[in-house]
Image (cartoon, rainbow, N blue to C red):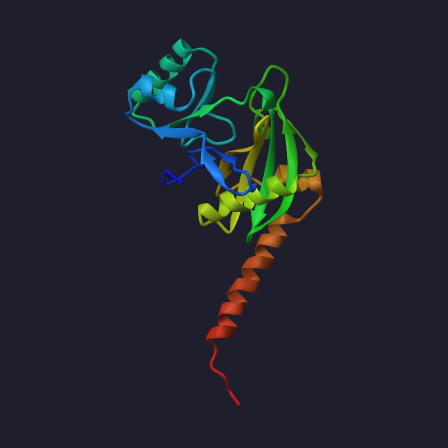
Length: 212
């Protein structure tokens, strides 16, 4: 697997599930100064989703539906010397994704997000709506594997349901919790604190000298 991580922000490559549900293949690619034609070809051609690496909450994300539009956006980002990602657009999942919260190798919460009217981004900050959803074992395994690859004990993994199987859209190392806690009724922040307390106290106990 090839991963390119910026100093801050989100996962800059997309992956799709393999036959066993936890093997991930590259379906998007990160570029900074690569030629425009190479960028669009490697990402599968238009339509493309082009996003700034440093963008959050759906900001800096553009859907380019033609090669000319993609080339224009890519050239504009390159002109700004911006780090960006070109990803295949999954038409059958337009405006819908699944956010999984992974904590210490387990999915502790999941929600389905739907984009607002006329929008392809499902981010809640862009007017999207959220609802509780059941995820498959394959989706669960993929979310955990994506976090594991990046060495993250805590992460928000966004998955698209493509015709060929679940596709990892991105992995966020600092996911917002307000939306998913409201939808699921779960105290995820409390889970994180509990995990940290257990980890820290466990380490302190292990390091303490035995006194008879």
